[in-house]
Image (cartoon, rainbow over all chains, first blue to last red; front, side):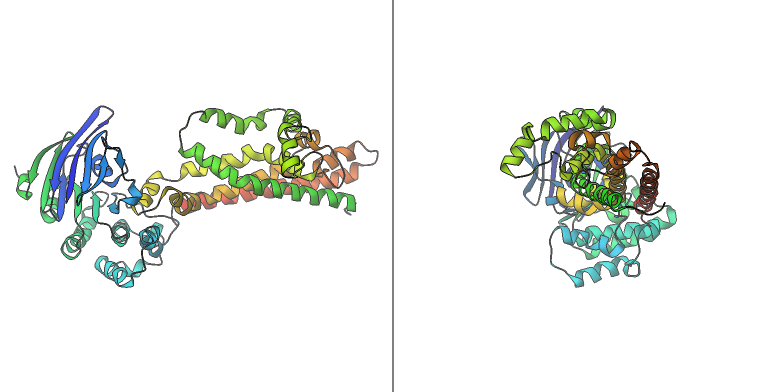
Length: 221
Length: 231
C-alpha cells in the first residue's frame, strides 16, 4: 500500500497531494503541468517534499518532520521514464542486468527469461540502445526496471514519446505486465483511454491538487 | 644531422618520464575536481575554479618561484615532506614533475569537466532508481561516459607537461640528467655556439609530440560524441 501526504513548492507552482492507494495499478491522471511527474519523482526519492510523509507497505520513505529521507537508491522503487534513459555505453543485456548488479542480487536466469519473453526483447540483447527503435527502447527500459525486483513500479507516461502505432504496440505488454507480475504500479498519463485500459484505481490531479479519487469511473465525471 | 646524441636522448627520456608521472598523478585529482566543479555547488567553488586556472594566467616564473617557496628544501611543505616522508622536490626530477603537473593541471581538468557536464544527469537519476549509490553511479555511468574526455585531458596535459619550461627551470633549475627536459635543453643549446642544429632536432621532436597530442585529443573527442549517442 502506498500512502502519500506531501506539499512541495516548485517556483510559482504549489503541489499538495494526499492519497492512499491499494490498487494494482494506480493511475495518476491529469493534464500536463498538473504536477504528476514531480509527484512520482518524490515517490521515487529523486525530489524531496517540503512537508509531509510518503510510506509504502507501512515503511516510511519520507517524513520531513521526523527528518527521514530514504535516498532513491535504497528505495527499491522501479522507474520507467518517458524517455527510456537506457545507458548508451551498455548493450541491452548489460542494461537489463544493471539493477541486479547494483542491488547485489543473485543471478536469476529464470526471472530474466520470463521478463525478456514477456516483453519480446530476447533478440535485442546484443544491441546498443542507439540501434533500437523507440518502442524497443521503452520495452527494454521496462525490463530493466522489472529485473531490479522493485516493490513498486513507477511509469511516467511510458507511451508519451511514441507515435500512435508504437503505442498500440506497447500497450498490450503493459496489460500483460499488470496481469502477470505481482508488482504494484503507479501509472502516470494524461490519456484517458490508456487509463481505462490499465488502471484499477485513479488519482485525479489538477493544478497541483488531488481533485478526485476512486475507480476508473471518475474519468468520465 | 639527424643523429640524436646521448645527451639529447637523456633530455627526451627525462621529459617523457616527467610528463608521464605528472599526468598519471594529476589525473585522479583532476577527475575528482572536475566532478566537483561539474556536479556540486559548494561554498568557495569560484575560488577553487580560479585557483585551478591560475597557472594558466600567471607568469610561469611566478608559479615556479611560488613552488620553490612552498616545496623547496626550506619551504613550509617541502621541509615537512623531506623530514617526515623523505620526499624531496628541490632540484630533482620529481620537482620537475610537480611543476609540470601544476602547470598542465588547468588543461587536464577542462576537457574532463566539460565531458562530465555533458553526461545526461537523467541517466544518473535512472541509475539511482535502479539501486546505485552515488559512488557507483559515478563509476558505472558518469565516468565511463566521460572517459573519452578524460583521455583527451590526459593527452593535452601530457603535451603541456612535455613543453613546460618557465616554472620548471625556476623551481628545479637546468641540471643535465636530472632536471634538464627537452625545453631546457633547447634553451641551453641555443645559447651555445654551434648548438643550432641540435636545438633544431629537439624542436622538431617537440613539434611532433605536440601535433600527435592534438590529433589524439581530437580523436578522443569524436569518440566521446559517438559514445554519448549510443552507437
